[in-house]
Amino acid sequence: MKNCLICNKPVEAFMSFGKMPIANGFLAKDQFSEEYFFEMKVASCTHCGMFQLIEQPDREKMFNENYAFFSGTSKSMALHYKEFAEYVGSNFLSPNDPFVVEIGSNDGIMLQNFDAAGVRHLGIEPSENVAKVATDKGIQTVCGFFDEELARQIMTEHGQADAFLGANVMCHIPYIHSVVEGIKILLKPKGIVLLEDPYLGDVIENTIYDQIYDEHVFLFSVSSIKYLFELHDMVLVDIEPQETHGGSMRYVIAHKGVRPISDSVKKQLDKEKMMGLDNPETYETFRRNCEGSRDSLVSLLNNIRQQGKRVVGYAATSKSTTIINYCGITADHIEFISDTTPVKQGKFSPGAHVPVRAYEAFVDNYPEYALLFAYNHAKEIMVKEQKFMKSGGKWITYVPEVKVLG
Ligand code: TYD
Image 1 (tube, helix red, strand yellow):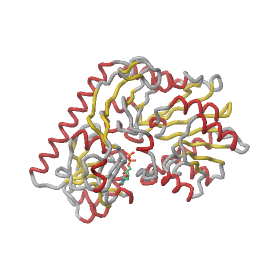
Image 2: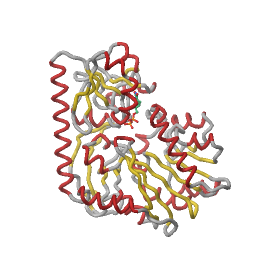
Image 3: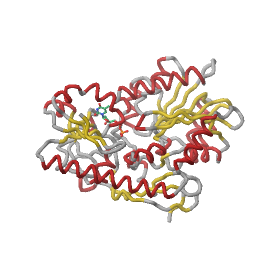
Image 4: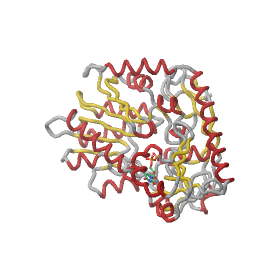
């Protein structure tokens, strides 16, 4: 029996996705024999409501000098972070020498906007290769894992922050209490914390089970984030649903007693009760929905292959690792996965070892079907792939349900 990473009460898994590799662990043939696997089991704590992995690989296995995820690969995400930075800039920065801190700042996709506006900033990014891309662009970046100790060092060197940002990073960190303490130390008395992460409500409602992978040790809800920050005397003052990653939530947090709490927090808490996020039966249903989605996708792929038609995976996303390995998809189902990230190309997908090829391999010889692993970028991709669709190409998606489009 494991204990909850938030409230320390015992938690029990309601489902296992089976053996999983490192989601961003794209590898060469000579690394197959030493590939790392763990059993991916998930639980929802019946005491504090935090949805979590029972076991997570060591952080150095996931975030290191070979990290394969670069935020800058999506145009729509670049626009999203630009708007995010503008929102922070126009609402939360003090007129005198404002300071913005971001954790998991990746290649600087968010902070570059503050840099362009001449705002003092600091990114904290543990993956060395990704941090280097940011520093090469002139974005102030520390390569390391943020926690209470690092927060103290930053405060001594740079002072406290007006705004503390984290996009798709808080849900990665199992020692989150130390991170929240660090945020508390580093934040000015009237400062603001803005976090964005995939939203549990959307995952449950639309069976977006591919948001569950090694890096995502948590899937947050409004209720679990509120609980977590209250343990540290901080307050969730506002929320705003986001379309990113198939459904995310922006959490606005402040020191206690500094800002009023918006009605939207209460409304979303009520909605979460209606959805049954605190009810174990909801997770039983979710498990059945995952199994149903898996079975439909596999039978669709088998049918297409029996007809002798070609299927190519579109975008070797982190989350595709869960889909591919949980569904048992192999290179017999999908010929290869095309991806625009140079470090993934020429390698093989984690676990199932489907070849990853450059985007040009897709364009040069359109398949009959493309399995859309980056469905969260569907709008951007549909605009870009008019020619594929005109050639008769069809899309396979599985969120919110398995479907063929086009
Ligand atoms: P994303 O959904 O951000 O991935 P993750 O599940 O890892 O969060 O998608 C990023 C990946 O998708 C990255 O490997 C690049 C690839 N990609 C393409 O290959 N083509 C595209 O048009 C887009 C938008 C992404």
